[in-house]
Every structure is written in structure tokens, then in C-alpha cells.
Image (tube, rainbow, N blue to C red; front, side, top):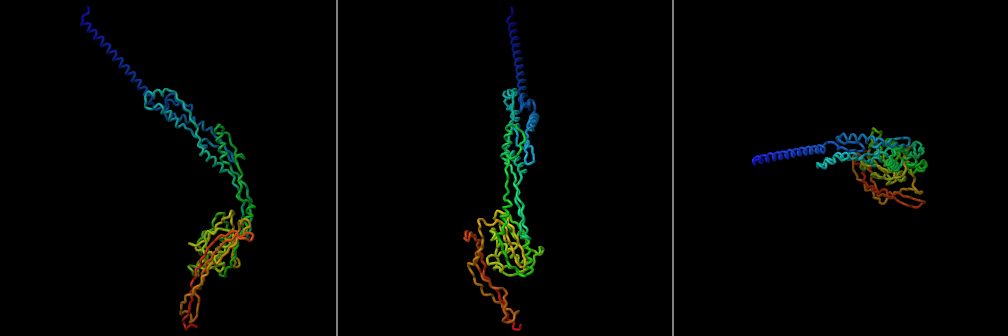
Length: 464
């Protein structure tokens, strides 16, 4: 019989064997699990698209993000290159590509979603997603603003503008010649845009002819007949010059600057801007002019006569008086309150064409007569225009200052500066129809101050 000691030894040996086997199994399982963990981790953390991933029918599983993007983009570019719609308009044709039509895709977002879907950091979930098939298809996105801008730019570049009738004024003969108008053509951009959008929805890339279905005629602003009716003589003023050669040379230069001038609707004529500073280099001469209330010889003396003559013609032509300044005392060549002075840096005559048609000016100096004629749109409804200058106050001239001088013989008198009356004058533009006053426009309220003159009285008894 087996002794107790032997039995005990056998039990110990058997237990050791069992314990060793269990330990071996445990180690093996641990190794297997660890290996599986590492495998799952490698799959989940791989810097590549998960196996079984397709974008727009392109298999990208196992590819890096850059490789997958390149493969998908190549296929997408081929698809987008098929999107081309030619537009033809007035002999010009342009093929609008997908890019020009503002077409793009959401493929960038899809690639990002597909790439990151098994990279959440949750191992089991990421591992499962890594072995699940994934398919996505991009969508076309239309930037309507970009498409509209591209199409409209093409259409506007090929519209046919209307040609306005043209009036040519010959200031030498004071006659007009005319060129006729012609209609233009303009495409309705929204209609064309809608047609392109409709074809895009149907994946229909046939050419579109921009014809009468999408265009409308463009009428000129005015016709030759309109111009012929609206180049009438609407304002005339005539003033008399003196026989001062230098003064008349200055007036003639001003007339030449204005003669033949065309003022567009809404445009403002500034005599100072037109002529610039009056200088000898421009041909202006020294002649008498009023400076600070004194008659003084200056370069350009006398130019105010053209300004005043033009001003009066403009009043009758219903032009807007934007700026006008009167002299220190009333002019001799125009009724009181109807003069206009110029000074290069602070006094100007500015006239605005407030009609719907161009205004044409004729100005000339002939035989000491300054004549300004204005042609343009006549007043509506048979209206006639007149100008009224009314003296509302008259101030007596003060007694002159007497200065005694030994340069004159005793008792002799010589007026150095003449005393002048003062005036308050209101100028009004009057509108008449069939002999009845139907409107007024207050133009100016001028104040001419009374001026004290100077008289020299001689004291030298030796002068005879």
C-alpha cells in the first residue's frame, strides 16, 4: 500500500502541475488579448481611411487623407469638367464652366467626416467602425450670386447701347446740324440666369442663344426730332462796349472762351473754372476795373461785361443761378441789379442747366456790341420769361470829401472820385402765359451802398 507520505508527495506534484497549467493558460490568454488589443489599436489609429470607405464611388480605404482626397478630386474634376453651358449674344459666345457658374461641392467636408469616423478614441467602437462599409456621395452647391455676376458681366459687355441723336452747333453761323438716333438692345439678365439654372437642374448643358426671348430694345433719351424742337433760341442779351481797345480785347477773349460751349443737363458752368486766372500770358490786357470800390487798372479789366451779358441771357433761358456777385456800384451797360462781376479767387458766375436737354452758347463782340445767345429747351406750355429789376430803396449820395491842394490853381475844382447813390434792388424772374403772370422766382436782392466821393480844390494863386 502506498504510504501516507507517498500519497502526500503525489498530491503536491499534481497540484503543482495543475497550477502550472493554469498559469500557462492565463499567460497565453493575456498574450492573445494583448495581441488583439494591439491589433485593434493599430486598425483604429491607422492614419488612413478605414477599409471599405468609398467617396463618390472611389475606394479610399487604406489611403492617407491626402491620397484619398487626390483620388476623389480627380474623379470629381472629371465630372465638373462636363458642366459647360455656352451663351451666345450679339455675335459673342462664352462657354461658362462649372467654376464660372459658381458650382462647387461639399466633398471636402465628406472627406473629413469619412476619415475621422473611426478615430474617436473609443477603441471598441472605432474598431467596429473600421470594419463597417461606408459610402458617401458629394452634393453640388450653387453660388447663385457668383453665377449671376458672371452672366450679367457677359451680357452687359455685349449689349448694344442706344445711340443718342446729336446736335452740332456752329458758333460762326449760329446754326445746328443733327445726327439721327438709333435704338439699342439690352438682355434681361434675370431671364437668362433663370434659363441657365433650369438647365443645370436637368443636367442639360446645351448652348443658350440670347435672342428676342431674353432681350428688349433700348430707346435713346431723345431723338433728332426732340433735339430740333429743343435747340431753340431761348435767351438773348446785347450790351454796348466802349472804344477802349484793351478792354475790348479782354471782352473778346471771354467771348471766345464761351462761344460754342455746350452745357449738359445738370451741368454747372463756372466762368472762373472755364477761363482760369486772367494773365498776360493768356493774352489779357490792362484795363479799368472796380477794385475795393475804386476804378483801377488791372489785368483783365472789362471781362465783367461778358459775365453780365451772359447772366442776363441765362435769366431769360431759365437757367439756375448758382452764384453771382454784383459790382460795388451799378454798371453803365446793364440795368441796375442785372450786372455780374468776376474776381479770380472769390467772385464767380456759375450757371446750371436745369433742363432736360443740352444748352448751347454763342458769344461774340462785333462793332462794340456784345451779344450772348443761348439755345436749348424752350419753356413748357407756351410760357414766356421776363426779368424785372425793381429799385425798392434809393439812398442819396453823400456830399464829397473836399481836399485842398496846391497842385491846382486857386478856386479850381476837380472830381477825383464821384459820389454815388445807394440802392436796394430786387430782381425777379417772371413767368407769363397768354399775357397772365403764372409764376415768379426771386433771383437776387442787391445792396449798392452810397459812396462818398472826393473833390480836389486848388489853392495855388500862382497857377493861371
